[in-house]
Length: 209
Image (spheres, rainbow, N blue to C red):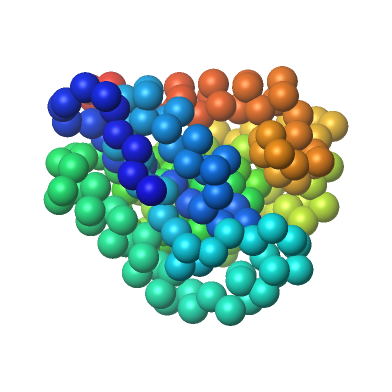
């Protein structure tokens, strides 16, 4: 799903990666919202058109994924934004399952910024060596699937590698707190984290060094 600004021009690109539900209306709306801030946004579809409506089906879809094909899909999205949309600077952004995939893309593609919303983390410094750009991480303190201990370890690894990073852990909220259709939705924290995301992207994709 491609969302672009209404006015013609050259804009930075964002590879957006959906939650474990798939490329649903929520993700499409987020792509449109981000595009309205001056970005070419390509939201990848890692489920070949299917959108899960139950947790059981979402688990099945994730477990059946070919990890190599997922990376190829995301790298192809990055190439499309560079070559077809003339996006000189690129970032990845994803939530939940997509947050983990945003990090995976960063390990396999040269980017200018990476945004991870409560995604599965890699803390091995040898694996993180490829990242040579700023990372923004958004997490919930009460997230049982992405515990604070792993977030702290991730932050320490980035710091040890001198990778610029902003890690925000919101107190009192759990996993997927930024999904308006989910049970853990936290409006105030969602707004604050989105403001931080836009500031981060603007700084790293738009401002002249």
